[in-house]
Amino acid sequence: MELSVVIAAYNGALVLGRTLESVCQALPPDSEVIVVDDGSTDSSAALVQTFGDSRVLLFCQENQGPAVAANTGIAQARGRFLARLDCGDICHPQRLHLQLEHLRKHPELVLLGCRVRRVDALGRLLGESEVVRGAARISRGLMRMNLFQHSAVMMRRDAFEAVGRYRPFFRFSLDLDLFLRLGEHGPMDNLPQTLSDWVMEPDSISFKYRAAQAEFARLSRLSAAARRAGLPDPLDEGRLEAPPLLALPREERLAAYHWECARALLMGDRPQEARAELVLALAQGLDPHQARALARFSHLPRPLRQLARMARIAWMTR
Figure 1: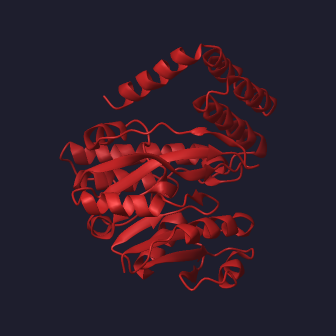
Figure 2 (figure 1 turned 30 degrees about the horizontal axis):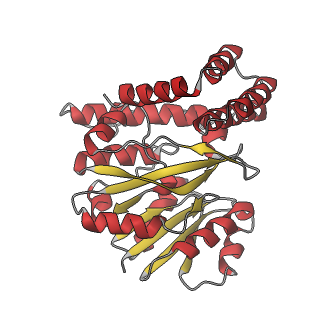
């Protein structure tokens, strides 16, 4: 089989349907969709069972976290290429075709991403992420920021297996840890086209476990720095301590969510709407200094905002 799309789901019954509909409309021939239900307590599994498309296969396990769920799905997958899609996100109709075509034309690439739209929980289009192209820039930049949207990547299965799959220790930065290791195995790149939607939800991992995710990301880069220096991976030596998996209070999640909505709206050159989101973030307890900095940025003329974004990307990928 040519392609397997792997989706890990945990209590995603309210949003999984839109994800399955989008990916099934985008599937090339000789492809499958693997859904792993990671011990959900809602009707996620039942939704997949009744979806009515023979290309969608369901596997259930006890709750073990996103990395183990993804590894379970990939172990069941038959494709030479693996595409990831997060529960709730949207795959655009041409995404899988274009990524497959590019990877076939460029056999040296081990992973390929794309530009991503950001969408809020109500379905409002906010803006598009910056996209960085070129393997060398990406390799350098990953040590400072994540330059791929996990839900929008496609990779070669043999490369994924060669680097040791997802590592469950990095529970909430499993993607960054994988990208860093894949980048040591071979070149990676992004397509310039917008081919995926990241639907931001206040109760998603990105907001619910924001502090833990940031610490796991730091540890991912710490491990990568050691490997790049020719030293043993500290995870392999048992020298990394996982942060506590503490969910943020609801107010802090909402503050972070509205902050990210404001940033995304500025990506879409909509400063007035961005400032309205900052007001909502402040009402939930966002640090006023953080809000003022973004508000000042939003008042800059559009050319200066664009220049500042380009300069930031250039600095981060230097």
